[in-house]
Length: 240
Picture (tube, rainbow, N blue to C red):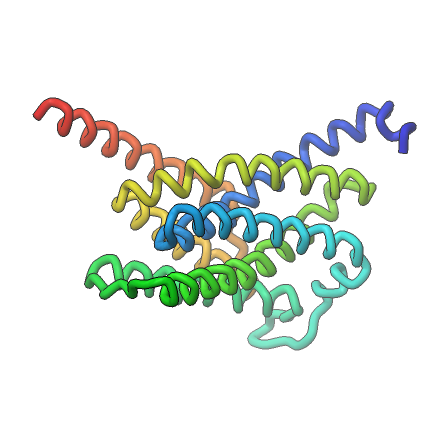
């Protein structure tokens, strides 16, 4: 272990894998930030912490069973000339879940809904949020770790990269969630991102891989435009 620390290629692998895990974790941050936005502030902070902790646990568990994880990419059956594996099934389920969830949230945002009130409603909402975070964590964890396997040869490096990336994601998730909560238009944009991610997961499961770089560029460009709108709107309000 100590000898590994003296090898430059180990540090290069750790840096590269950490950056990749952070980038792949953007999907997770967006989902968690949107899903906790309806909770009270204290519950939202706790839900974010639990959600990212579960994501970390899932990733470490998957790293401990690499041989089983690699088996998830083995073909199960063929349909229309495409070989479907367990990974494809997981991505398909996760993509459809994101599409349904984002569509439902957009509908509520446009049509309006009657919010439940009281401690019981808050507890039910909190339990539902944790359950949904649990489901999507499983999807993102499988996709993230399978992608990372080919980038590092040592499991110690993988675990270290995952832990560091989760720490960065936890620090970033708070400001992102608060910003989304206080700016309704950005929440709608985040829900659109979830629709985009859901489509990408379903397409990937069907054998039509959409490069993540294209998706993240579109997200970054849209977020940049929205930031300009938020700043312009803030200045208008101050000048009144």
